[in-house]
View 1 (tube, rainbow over the protein chains, first blue to last red):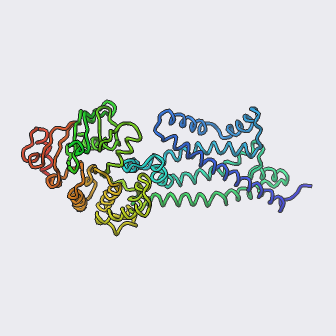
View 2: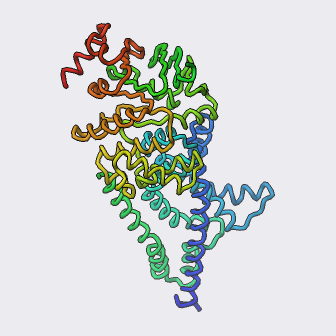
View 3: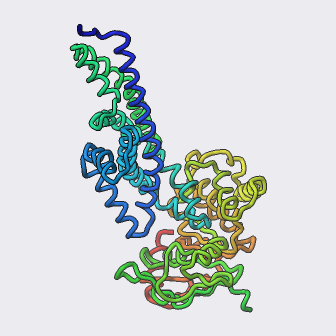
Amino acid sequence: MTPHFGLPEFGFLLRGLQWTVLLTLVAFAGGCTAGLAVALLRTCGHRSVEWITRIYIGIFQGTPLLLQLFVVYYGLALTGLKLDAFAAVAIGFTVNASAFLGEIWRGAIQAVPRGQTEAAMALGLHYSSRMRDIVLPQAIRISLPATIGYLVQLIKGTSLAAIVGFIELARAGQIVSNQTFQPLLVFGVVGAMYFILCWPLSWWGSRMEARLALANQR
Amino acid sequence: MQDQILIEMKGVQKWYGGYQALRNVDLTVRRGEKIVLCGPSGSGKSTLIRCINRLEAIQQGSIVVNGHRLDDSIKAIDVVRQEVGMVFQSFNLFPHMTVLQNCTLAPIRARRIGRTEAEATARKYLERVRIGDQAEKYPAQLSGGQQQRVAIARALCMQPKVMLFDEPTSALDPEMVKEVLDTMIGLANDGMTMICVTHEMGFARQVADRVIFMAEGQIIEEGAPDAFFREPQHARTKQFLGEILAHH
């Protein structure tokens, strides 16, 4: 007998949602940390280091995320490092996010007027203080809309994790749909869950953007 | 006499790629001296003062500030920057910090002074530039003239031996020029060593010990303001003075 879409099925989707949120949080936190390092290296002023970082960004922006997940999951297994699906996709998404966030923040750092750095240097402030106290606080404000935009892409992008057998929200939906033969209902619920997650972020992002544009007018 | 010399530049040459911005510049500045640098745009006067605190590197020659020779080492650059204050044409206040935070950041971070002491010093200098009541405001809430006076106070908080001014009134509305010049005159009267890149010839007459004229990266002529304005020696200087004094 074919089960109908009921509470147990809904619970299964919720657990998928939980994994989607968890994967997003881990990838975003890891991506932010590594991305900050990428952005700083990309703007450090040493030509060779900047080039290496540029190539790093180019590789992850220029190849499909799907391929990168395969490389981490199956590639690392070949070297003898057997990772479970969650660890593998968490690493894959983190590295990918570090390249994209690094590039977003590289642009934001360079958008802070040169005079800010010069004034800080003239005051005798070192690189660490110039970045921490002067450049990054301004760069983060500038980059906030784009960063939030990327976070929304990341949430939806985590559905690719299904490809290595990780059961997140989209994959959970597929499983329930196959069991119940109610694809419209099931994927409708799945879509609503993504929407509830993403829409407030998008709204916040565009509000930030409007506020920033207003601040720049003044 | 040796310790009367605060800044000594010898044979300084600077290139931007193939373009030579400074040609064999020699300049000696004594303690307490006020120098006005003038010249047409692109003559190298801003570049010259930006070399003194190493915002620009030089390719040849030597610069000694208060006995410290400026080379490429971080240590030397550090020491020199602590002795040299700078005020920019575009103010360059930190927009995300209050006026008070602008003034205390460098003393706390670079001089490792405690917050209480740094704030007391900052308030003293903000009073001195007559802006003490604005300490809690953000730069964007102030007029251009007020912002530039904050920038002067911010530089003074590091207790520099010399102040560099890079066209400090050029970005200001005309009615705000005077308040900034008055602040600078007050500073000069207190005995601060100053090098000012400016086209304010009234200021030059009033406070400068020496006026230096530059063109094409070279020092063409220098002298006490009276003589400099009354009888400039070089054709290039006469032409320049004729052009700028015609406006005033």
